[in-house]
Length: 361
Image (cartoon, rainbow, N blue to C red; front, side, top):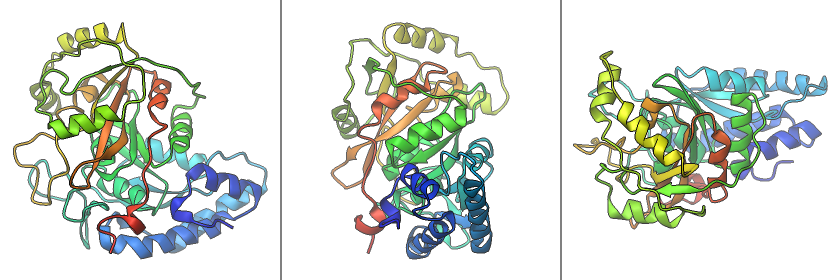
């Protein structure tokens, strides 16, 4: 049997289902139990149909019995509303959809939290803080141990920011469009297998070099965020200046359908990537804000350029600030070099605030 579902990686669950130590139906019922125990506090899920979940899990057990090789057999996942590519790939790999995760509801721009019919989605580490967005429920569900993997979509940092603020790993893949698919996990092994499933190819480990920047040349990064993220770096750093132009106007122009010129930033990034395999920064310039909103701060300052350029990027857990909030380290690779992101993952994981976190009571 699976001794502690909420602490298990997706890969561990899949191996147990494949070997017959536990059935996908049994795992699905564990996930539904975790949902009942935790989600009333954080509102990570918008919709869950328990009967449908069990039926889906039963179909996975039948696929396993028939000899089908499923790398993520029986793994419960949450799927971000509107996200299709990653969800379809993970279901084909044997995952069982527990339900749809929350996204921001109607309201003013830059509401970076999720909303359900039961209220706002809360950060599992600090209930009075935003989980980030727009993949708010996806990050909260993984951090709280409801599911080991969720899908997301990232148009300005919408996977990476909630991953950073909820203490999980979040990855967006290379994309030629502003919004890139991706996923959130709490296990390095799960990150690797999800990338392989989504990209349709095996990823060989690499030993990349990296360039570090607190600000990318323009962001108003808080010193504490920078120091915590920098201290978490375990990769060889080389002295390459990363001096880019603020992409704020270009990002808004792109969203509005106006012409966008990011040629200079592409040129400067090419110079950096000629010398280093990765660019490392804090994921956000600021800690999680409260549920009243971000104010004038742009939490996207360090992330949204890489939506315009299409580079693959991840946020991995770097530690905690003095207030007990998670901090993320952003890792950016050359286009179509997602395997280089994996080198930053050995320290990508945190314990489960659903049972041990500051706001779990």
